[in-house]
Image (cartoon, rainbow, N blue to C red; front, side, top):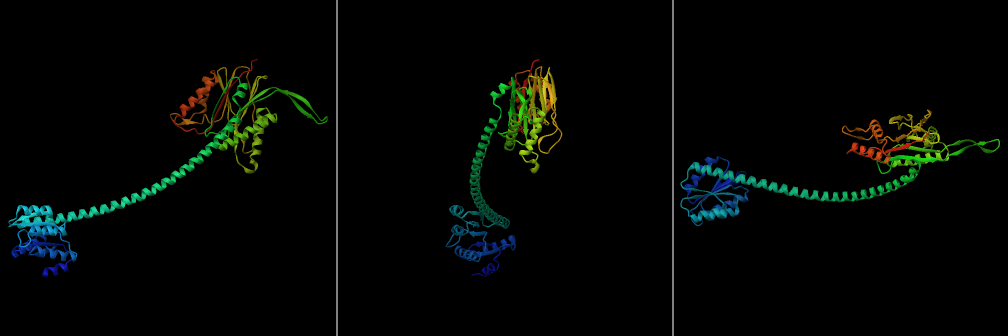
Length: 464
């Protein structure tokens, strides 16, 4: 083994260029010109035959050297250059191969191009500048390809890693999606059960309200626009007739009841807005409806201000507000029609009575206190209206006028409502209802309904 082997074994960090030629003068010339062109960046190994070159490559590979370039003559004894480069290519496919040709056959050149990825051939005698430039380009090409291959391997590894992560993530997402679907079905089932229960509660609440037959029998012309926000409602309406009767008083001395007066037939109507909406409001509406029936039909209280006062007392008692200190309650517009005396009596809490006579609209505000909640000693006010002329009355909760919408997303407002009522009060009441419904629908457009809506219109007329 030559001394150059010892040199390479002591410089394992440097790549090696191998020159193969059977003429010593050419080998020495190659080595000199390569060292001049490449300086000390590479080790130069030489071989005088193809077999020696293959042995050197084996040893260099065992020592861990990189071999970016092999330069081989074509005409050599025993093994020609094309055969040498093809065998080297089998071991080092990425190494660049340059053939020196003095007299080479076309078949030999074609053979090495096809089977050894020949990088370039240089004719003898060569130009030192051409040799230096060709060698540098070959080495540059080798490292560029090596870098590209490394990058491709890294990309392939990264891609494989990403594919695995995507696969793992897909499995996780599929598992999560299955859990979500399970939860979705559970929620849907629960929502269906809840909705079914609320719809059943709606049937109970609707059964509590006066039927169309009762309303038609008690009122000559009317409409009711009733639009809960959440299936069941915290708003409700109450209509009943109190028949004429004698008024009795207990004579304690004689232990008998004596007649002290006579009460004419009354029709009593109420529009009620309970605290909350949906299920909580519906519970309050049941309480309110029951208490109105008890006060008016059982306790024989028929004056509107006294009805409201007793309702306030009863609500506080039923909800134990003296103990619980909660403020739940209701706002009420209450009318008592006495056709024999040609009057309509009104009392209210915050909500008004709007009525129209002789094409003029009037509004009577309710008292600024609630039914239920904190106690209040201020009495409710009774207002009396003469209905000997045609009178068109409207009582309602605040849902209609408080609904947001319109071009500036504002509340509908009491003024707009009053204008619509005045403009259309002479129309049949069912037609008035449709106009109000369409006006509100147009106003709301894409806005959600924010509260329960209840508006009642009716005609009063007791001719002289």
